[in-house]
Structure formats: structure tokens, C-alpha cells
Image (cartoon, rainbow over all chains, first blue to last red; front, side, top):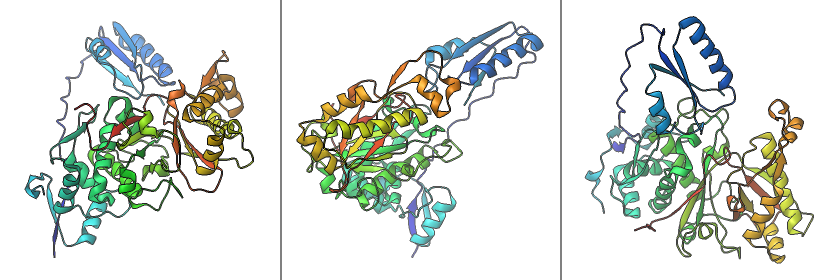
Length: 93
Length: 349
């Protein structure tokens, strides 16, 4: 005899975030570089910053580091990054 | 009895229990082991046992803001093999894990591969037939096994902590299938863990700790409590060098044979905590001898396994024979903190 069972998953579809329009150029832009706090992120972002400045003419780079690599970035840190034209969020393990 | 119509989960028709298991396995809704079919009646019985409405929110996952409802947690508890009477423990464990200090997202997604270990105190242990003695950390008791497993299935199904998905554990450890123990309160003169952590005597509670794999020690050649504890702290120092140097909530599981010696010397849990706080320390330069010299740094700073004596959770458990003990290290320092939650009652209400 058939039985009825229940779906064990959350059954909630998280609304997808919208995509920001792509930047046509990085020249003159302010780029945020978010370090997740792990040991190897710094070197990676140093290179990224050098390339952004030398090859793409970014006007400014805002470097920030998460105080806890395993927790979301604090609201005040995100509020600072909102001012950037684009942000690279880096994970270094 | 709560009406089954109150349940809002999607219904699935299957031919029989065996087909239900096959469907859930195919859908990635298990830990790989067979499941019990979560029928409406079985889920409703869990909710009734806990006196919870189906839509009661047990907690919110703090990063993605996902709601964990009693109904969905009960579905997973049934799948894990829980009897309805076990459900209040599962619910309390889920509530505890959703408290901010537990850092649920980090503790369940990390490459470090932690498991939530559940430590149960109070009269519910005996009511449910939980095991606190022989083989205390392992197989044998349905309650221990399925309550711990229920938490894993909740993580898999409600928070998408699927290996290679949000669960990025490099290795994980066997405790990720199930890791639930009860304190041997009857076999110990010590204050039970939950009472030390603010739960009134006579109430039941569960403590959750995001833990790395347990490390067993053995010392059957001394009656000196300091020597016994030195064996435990040596293992903690090894963990600090081989795994993670950061301080956090370590759990020490002390079995009867060693407990009796420590008790005979007049030591309570507080003396144990203070001894371990003093002794479980390494220097950063010690990393040179374990292959981590590159990050040992210039300053020879001392690191303690415990930020304070209160960081140590001392649990009486284990069979009567054997000088074995267990060090259960924290997943990653103090990023996730142990949380204790009363079972079936609200202390703030």
C-alpha cells in the first residue's frame, strides 16, 4: 500500500540577487579589495592591487580585512565597501 | 494530537518504506545511511512530544537567514530514527546551534570539518535510555545515535550543508554522522556540565560544541590527579601544534576509573579546569618541530589552550574499567563557542 512521506528540505527558494551592471572600464574607478582574513589572501590581493593600478588605471583601492574569517563581514565594513564601484572578495586558504 | 493537516511540507507518494529510502537516497537527502520514512503521523508525533506547533521557528540560520521550523526539524529527526520522545532534545540542540556564539555557518561550512557534539544532562537522559557509561562516545544507544544523527540531517537538508556544496570539509570526521553523549551524573559527585553552565538542577539541557575529531588518551599507571591530567594536557598541546594553536572550548571526557582517582584526591571540576588552564600551553617556537616553522614568527609567544579555566568543559562519562579519556578539541579556537540550552523549558519566559 502506498505511503505518504514528507519533503525533508527547506522548500524555500532564496530569491536570487540581481547582477550589478558591468563596468565598461576600470579607469578612474574605486575598487574595494576584501580580505577574508586568511594567511594567504594578502599576497594575492597585493598582486591584484598592483595590476589594477598599473594596467587598469583605477583611481583608488580600498583594502579591508574581515575581523573573523568564518563570519560574515560586519555591517559597518560592508557600508564602507558600498561606496566602491566594484569589490573583489577574496578567499585565501 | 496535533492535526496532520497543520503540516505544510510537500507530500510525496511512494510504494512503501523501502521505496521511500531509495527516493531519499537518490535525492541526496541522507547522510548515506538508510532512513526511516517521515510519514505525517510520525512527524506529528514528534511535534506533539515536544508540545510544538509545526510552524514554530526553532532558530534562524544567521548568515542566510533561513528559518528552521519545528516541522522540518521533526521530519529530519524521524528520518534519523528518533522516537518522538527524543525530539525535544533535537529541537533544543538546533536552537542552541542557531545562537550567535555557535557561529553556525562557519562551523558547518569550514574546510576544518567540524561536527557538533551534543552533551546531554538532566533527567531526560534516563527517560530516553541514553548511554553515559560503556562505549559512551560510540554505538549502542538508539537515543544517542539518532539524536546526533538528526542534527546532521537537519544540516544537510535544511541548510544545504552537503559535502562539496556548503560543507567544504576537506576530510570531516566520523562524528559528522552522529556525536551525542550523556553525562554519567549518577556515577559522579561532580556538578553536571549543564548546571555549571547556568541550567537549574533538575532541568534537562543539551550543550553543543563545534568540535574537531576526538583524541583518546590513556594513563593507568598513577593515582595522582595532576599526573592523570598531565596526560590529557599533553594531548591538548599536541593538538595545538599539529592542528590549531588557538584557544577555545575543549571538552575532556573523564571515565570512572580516572574520575575515582581524581575525586579521591578531592578535586572538583574547578580544580581540573584550573590545572589544565595552567598546563595546556605551548610556545609559538614549538611549531618549528612540527613542520610549521615558516609561520612560527619571530616572537616566542606563549599560547594557552584555554582562554580561561571556564573554557574547559569537563564531562563524566565512560565505562567503569579503563584509564582512557578523551580530549575533544574545538573546531577552530574560539570562533565557535559552546552553547547550552535547556530542553523543553524556557528560562527567560
